[in-house]
Amino acid sequence: MTPAFKNLSRQILVYALLALGTIAFLYPIAWMLSTALKAPDAIFTPEPNLIPAHFQWNNFKDAWTAQPFTRFFLNTLLVVLVSTPFAVFSSTLTAFGFARIRFAGRGAMFLLVIGTMVIPWDVTAIPLYIEYNALGLINTLWPMMLPGMFGSAFFIFLARQYIMGIPFDLDEAAGIDGCNRWQVYWRIILPLCMPIVVVICMFHFVWVWNEFLTPLIFINDQSKYTLSLGINLFKNAYNIEYEKLMAVSSVSVALPLVLFYFAQDAVLGGISMSGVKK
Amino acid sequence: MANQTAARPQGWLAERRRRRRDNRAGWLFISPWLIGFVALMLGPMAFSLIVSFTEWNMIGKAKFIGSGNYVRMFTSDPFYFKSLWITIKYVFLVVPLQVVLAILIALLLNRATFGIKLFRAVFYMPSLIQGVTLALIWSWLYNEDFGPINYALQLVGLPRVHWLTDPHIALFSLVIIALWGVGSPMVLYLSALKGVSSEYYEAASIDGAGPLRKFFNVTLPLITPTILFNVITSLISAFQTVVVAYVLTGGGPANETYFYSFHVYRSAFTHFEMGYSSAMAWVMFVLIILLTGAIMFSSRYWVHYEADGSGKR
Image (cartoon, rainbow over all chains, first blue to last red; front, side, top):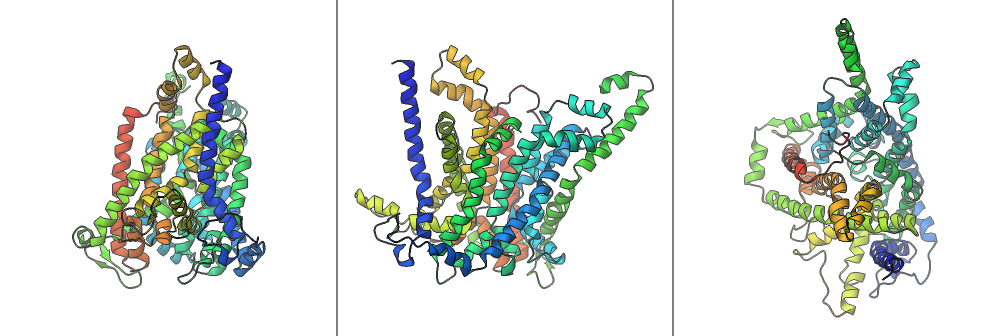
């Protein structure tokens, strides 16, 4: 076998496996899309078929207007737009503190940051409910925004690793030029952290977009629903409106998917450069 | 730099002043996280610990009952050990399978060149589908009469499977759903593979190593930090599983998918037994800490760090 032939046959094997995997991973999604386009009586048939006999494009419009989804969409968008800048700022600022400043208790505090990943929602859900209730935040969007706004363990960890990889000479040179620590962070380090900022934005966006349990517990008022909770309205104890539910779900998945498609190289590069090391 | 200052005779005072300034700055810089930690985690945790020793329905007055809740779950709650056992089974199935699947897909994607962005998006996409939608898609796939899986089984002459109603199978059906969402750990492995320097592979090739030996001697050791991270995060989230089972099986059949978190959620928000729910949550928390601690401890034997100094904490 010549090396070229070996290479080619290996590529063919790789793509054959990828194709198989693609079928397995996409089939359920294909059903979601096809159901979104079917008439209600064409969804459950003895012979499963993915191509609808009659495309019901109006399902999308009917579903979107059946509940105030524009409202839910704007709510979700508002949560993302308000919380993401804070998530970026808090995570990178805290990471800068851990990576660049030697202070008493640094090691212990960083362990604590990592430790918070272990806290299950089960433990904090009830007290948070009482806390938010006392602050008048139940039935507002704040319980969705607040948890990420102070920085979260994974992002702080990634950003710290990343900043540790930036040469310290830059800080020193800036110090000689008269920059204080805040200015070093704001003018030198943060702009260099852009790959990590992309990672934070991407993952934070997806987390907020998909979060189901948080709005389920803290939001009852329909006008404050997020998309993920609004989709739930098509399912009640008596009836599930599959075609409408899948139509809105398809729309809801589209935005994070497009985001991932265009940000993937930056995301992979950003994580790769900081390295998930513990 | 610090050594030079210390070497000077009068540097001692300056050094102390500098250290004080550093301390203040350090705590100031981590204060955003610290505020959130105290307000949204530490405070609630302390509160929950106290509540776990009481009987409380959230509206009336809490009654202190000592270790009553803890005694109750270990002695007189038939659902407790059942839900714990189911959750442990689920965790020990999902975590290793997810790690292996994520690595396999990442390895494949790392080999591909043409259409790579599209393939990455394909394998990542299922992890974007969550909650009710996820549950309902799979309720169709698993449907006994109209679902495509049983249809395909029937075509090749195999009997229909009761994916969600057979008590011996339902838990495995949920494991498969979890594996479908393997996209986010896969992204981490892809980044880790990207970070493996090609020099290592060239060196291995010169030594005459085949693809399998290259994987086990070069790739695998170098991605062990990511595996450690993945094992821990996936363990934690598997322990807290609730939404899909909540929608899909409601804990059934015969309570075979009645997860621990489900029990915690129900005790709190259906039965309003805040004390009991908090006590169960704390036992789970301690369990997760013990397991994570054990994994971290074991990691010194199997996690490999490149000798660049920054990897060690």
